[in-house]
Length: 245
Image 1 (spheres, rainbow, N blue to C red):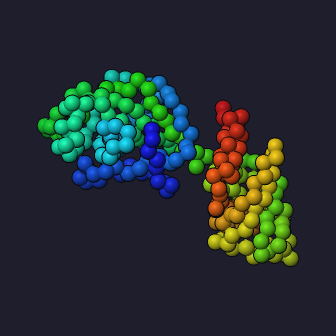
Image 2: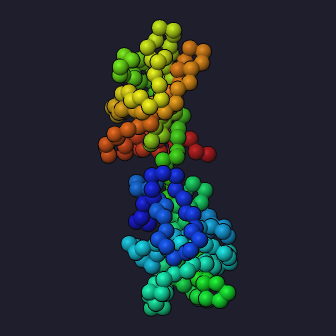
Image 3: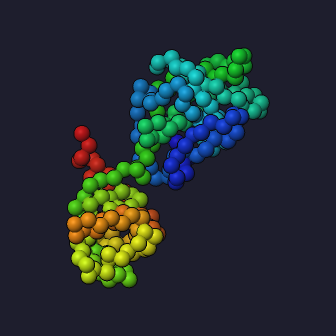
């Protein structure tokens, strides 16, 4: 799959009038898995994005029937020029969102009817590509680090890490300037992810909680360059590799 989703929570809302361009549904740089077609996670009622070939405009469709491992029935009101192209080349690229992943596969139009509704009968795919939305994956960690800024320098413990942000705790008392930190402020985080991988990046404070002498901060990474972003993503994936059941 070549297309990439919006960075916000991905959706595939089907508009009242189908035949309009579909929403993007996959983020750049996500983990791609190639699987047998039997792994396709799809249910009747699923919204689909339909393309005649990679790079073409997408159109909305709705899955209205499934013949398990045999065919898919999709309701889609396509423009006449697209229907004309299908007559000579019945190959399609389909994408859809399910269970926190984007699925994509190639298929062939086996049949098409217009009554009682515009329906495409598609061959069940032999294989699918699944893009796992890594931006939602988080891992529990215990990494010592430091937080720097206009509240001074403070030791912290990184307790949670994701490609888009982290959670950290700091030991404080009544005299600690860090007690005054507010959501929306930006500070500088530095920590060692191991093997000489230093993470030094600005973080935007999103959440502040204080209890029993500990300050918990929920933070979003900002201004990550491509190299640092890849380092964090690779670290998260390496932890997940050894923590999945």
